[in-house]
Image (tube, rainbow, N blue to C red; front, side, top):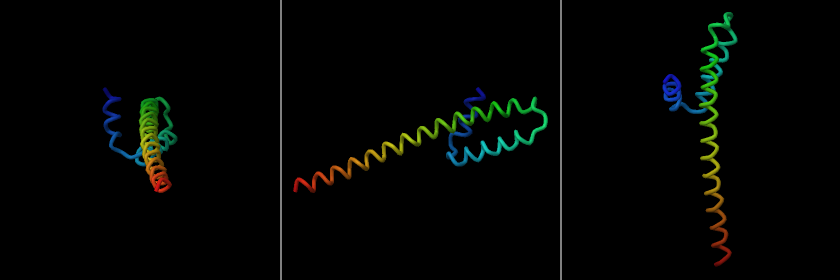
Length: 84
């Protein structure tokens, strides 16, 4: 259940905001003296990393589809001009 809440909390953030959040968590982990207390934070960081990775892949797919559409439009316009 915590995983779903974590994903919902971070779902609305941009990749840049998620990366900043991860960097802040890393900095906090590096500054902790007691490693026993950092296990939960580290696990949260790993989950956040997975969320960032999925969001990045989704964004890449979107950019790729938009690029493909743009290329098709450009090539179809060129073909139309050649036919005329």
